[in-house]
Image 1 (cartoon, rainbow, N blue to C red):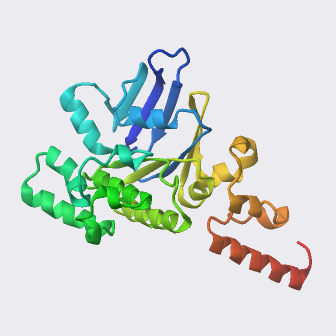
Image 2: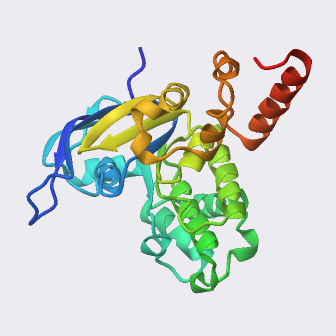
Image 3: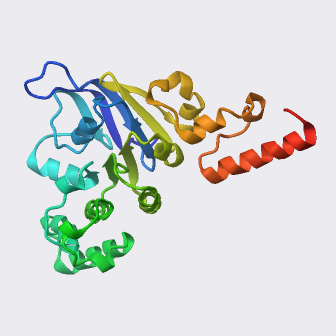
Length: 286
């Protein structure tokens, strides 16, 4: 049996000068290779969970493990831990520290004390992977928000983390930028990186994730395959709203939906709609 990538065991955390914990008895297991959407209402603690997972915050109680090894807040152990876990903040401005695109992506690589040749090779490959070659020498303050998000993500991925955490990556992105983000994440995942996104964008989570975690009242209340969670959505997470395609699918006749997987893309939904119309024309109502 494989060892989980990341584990939280009854983790608790409270911000200084507050009385109510943000997380309490928070437990979950993350397996390697997953594409996870972390869902929850505002204030549920999604960002805090990420900061704890990346060892930027120190838990008040409980334990956190990486592949069976307990998180210890000692300088060398923390350095190793943070090399494995990459975190892209909700606001890319918090993550961009240099003057140009190339300088920003290189910043973290120089902090790893890598040989110059390896830094240059990683930089070039990252610029290619994220379609940033033409922007390499562009000042960061000349970039659009979508471009800044791409640069921030590129800077994280240049460090080759095993686990990537993305905090609200679709915020303020238009439809084209969201599609581009989806393609970038798919490429990152295919290269072997496990990805967790914290998001309020149910439509993005619905079409992208293969695992769903829901955070409420300071702990993870749902952690299961996306196919099961969305199949039971009205009883599990109605307070979060409903993804658009899932809401449309729920309008199909129950007898039609009973033994068919729910559509995850517009193309899938269109095919189901055509098939239903053809069935109605040939056989009458199901």
